[in-house]
Amino acid sequence: MNTPLESHDPYLRTYTEPEVTSLLRELHERGKPFGILWGSAAVNGGTIDGRLLVDFGDTSVATLLNLLALLRETGRPA
Image (cartoon, rainbow, N blue to C red):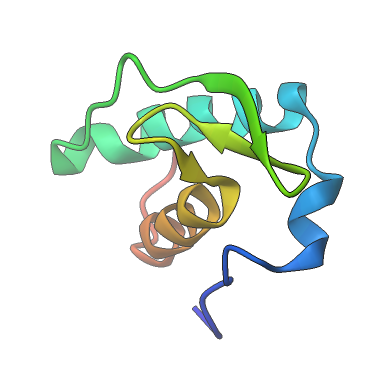
């Protein structure tokens, strides 16, 4: 992973709910082999400064993307 995304990165405002939902599906698939199971994780409809929140602790999309980047680096297919 090059550099982790910061939660205030303006680029994060471009993500739509369907895109984040797709990323969450990928997280579920890539996380299974590592015991990362967030069956209840979903886009919660809330925003902070225009950025969608993901409902596993009301975190930002940056956290989701950073976690996915780490999982992708393992080289295991989704």
